[in-house]
Length: 403
Image (cartoon, rainbow, N blue to C red; front, side, top):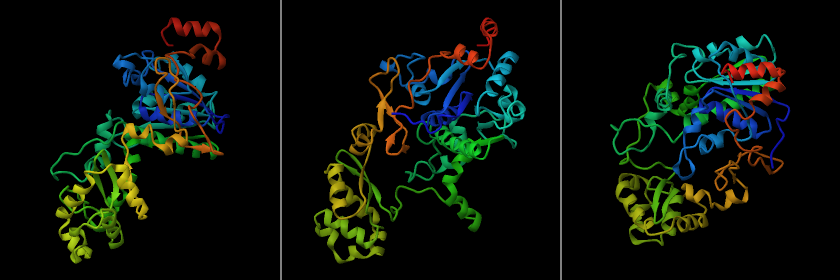
């Protein structure tokens, strides 16, 4: 089932940033008519896997299929005057334009509100750029790891670390653009409900800063740079990640947990002699001896399935759950019950499943977002003629290599 919550909205999407594709995907999932504008050679995401059998095919990229399901697809060369003129005519027929790139690229292509608003005053133009439309970095070319490093979050990932001298790393795959795409979709809908007629400016760097608010506040008020955690430091009060026989479990009580949580853990472990000594019920003692205590807890968890550890702790009213890997997620009872994984629907990827939208309307899943991803240039003629281009104009654009 699909939703028609945004059935009256039409969207034009351009630029090859994954954040733009994610923004458009979220709107398409909610029923908007999204037309994706690709360069003549196709979106680079078409060349990114996974691919069936690890054989690259531009119509069978799992990444592209996921990000572009339910969209229409056209090709258009925005580096030509005719391509930019055609884009402007298409933009005058839609409610939203989503564009991604540096400020220089978006300005050159004429896809910002300053260029498009004259033809349609209530148009919403959403720009997703590495560092925003203003400032000294607005034209910087980037990569995902560069934006992550500039945001500051790379310094704190992972944590705790084996050594505080370890270099910063990039978070999980595509986390940066996907986060920016989600925030861009939200900002776009706020602009639409406000009547449109504005430029939405989303900086990928800044979308990550909110996750560092605790560290930023600590520095602003106290002048203290929050340190990275070291693996040999005591675990946090909320619990630790423990190694089980078949994986990991999360939020297991540790030495620094409250006395009530510690008692629950000791009871779940069968009240071993070492854990029931009087000093073990003294929080300060547990903190001072955390490494030795953690080693003993790990010795218990290492011989048990993660589901069994979770069951024992939940029976004692402590929120411990298994840490899921990809293989666990696909058979997770909760996700199956909510029909979260749906068929890809892409030729060549029929057996693959992908996440549905996490949003529900009236209890119904949005499911697959209205269909497969478009083939390269599949809807070019249909979209152009629907926007009022004559047959001769379409033929000329085709002969000129603009589409």
